[in-house]
Structures are given as C-alpha cells and as structure tokens.
Image (cartoon, rainbow, N blue to C red; front, side):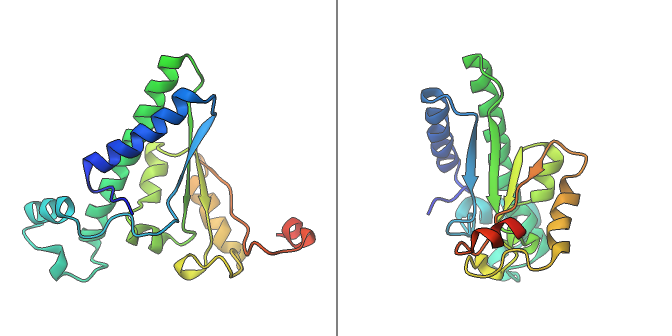
Length: 184
C-alpha cells in the first residue's frame, strides 16, 4: 500500500501520472481509491501534525473522531490539489486540452470520510471532473447490489448539481444479465 501522508509518496504517484500524460495522448486519468483502503492511517506525518495542531495524540481518540478524520482527509485533499495543478501544467505545456481527473470512491460518504476522502470538499474546489461512486454496500462489497435504493444515487447527483463535477455510477454486482444492466 502507498500512504498519501508522505510527500515522497505523493510525488511518486504524481510522477507516474505525469509519465502517462507525457507519453500517451490520454484525455484523462483515473484514481481508483477503492482498492485496498485505508489510504491514510496513523503515519508519523499525520500524527505529528495533528498533535501540533490539537495538542492530543489521535491514537488516544476514537478512530472516528471528527477532528482526526478532517485532519487526515486534508492530506488526501492536498494530493488532489497537487494532481489538479500537475495535470493543468502538463496539458498547458504540451499544448493539449485539460486532462480530466476521475476518482472512483465508495458510494458511502461515511466510508469515504473515514478513508480520508472529503468528497464534498473535492467537488467544491473543482478537484475532480468525474466521480464514480462504487457501491452503497458496506466495506465496498462488489458482490452486493450497488444502488438498491434510488435515493442513494440521487444524493450523489445532488452533491454535484451546479458544479463542474459529473457523477457516473458503478453498476454492481458484476455478474448481471444484459437486461439487468439496462434496467439498472
């Protein structure tokens, strides 16, 4: 796993994205944040900066403490800012249209925030062009029906309404008939 808490790790991922955009005529990049979360945990840069800011060790708090989750999410939001800036600079330098940024995330806002993703913040800042909510099933269960309640999907559409971010839903489980896919 890679931890986005470390600047060197973020720079490494940026270098891979840069290489892809420089070598190939891609229209966009996709960050698949649903693979093997958490993306951030209790790494030294996170713990040390939290202690400096709040005067308490986050390892002594409930793992869902709002202050801790917001602090942790700030690191991944910073990475998304770095991605946006890097992609804009690359596109301009190569004389190409902007490189679109897609992020695949959990369909559950509570899971996203717990895993270090402030989706509403990303939308507000224009850091992501397309969001792909994966599933509403807990723990990213790809064998369960992804959007069993229509209102769950509507919440995502509402979050993005009036912004530059588009939402494209993942349709799970994978083993559906063609008719089931069309209906969904």
